[in-house]
Image 1: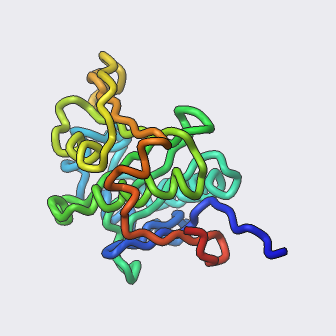
Image 2: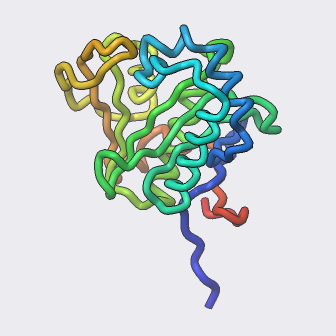
Image 3: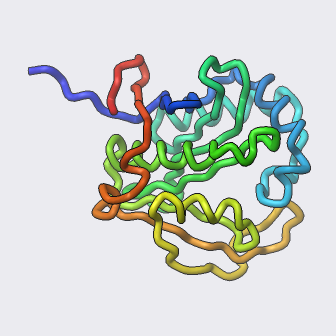
Length: 209
């Protein structure tokens, strides 16, 4: 009997993007993208307080991401154009909220903002989380001031569950209130994300979704 193909999804293709596991060789392109967008990222991404980082620091971080990905600890992805010539942004299916759920995070280069890329990525990752990773719940969390980010889960059929007060630090260390949006497995089939144009592939390129 043919062996069933399983995840994780190392590469995800959408209509306009390639989302894949980081490789240390991506370090120069990632550094260029982050360095160019430090001011754009700092209001919302706590890690941007440490930017710009050196190329060696970037390589070390990407090695850590790849190791954790291969071991099934956490799943951090780069967002690229279809030909993978440019880093459009970064995203992840994070396991920090529990093994039977995923939390989606994302950032997009400023020059690619307002193109719907973050929504496209989040829809694809939601589909992968439920159909490949077989989780029961997917969350998106964002600061209450980040109205653009909050619009993404709303579009995709996530439910606003509440606000955690003074939960997450911004780049200067100020603690901000954090909104939680979530979608459950029994809600997924009726959501916009269920119809996402996305194909997923395993570590050796076999299609798994």
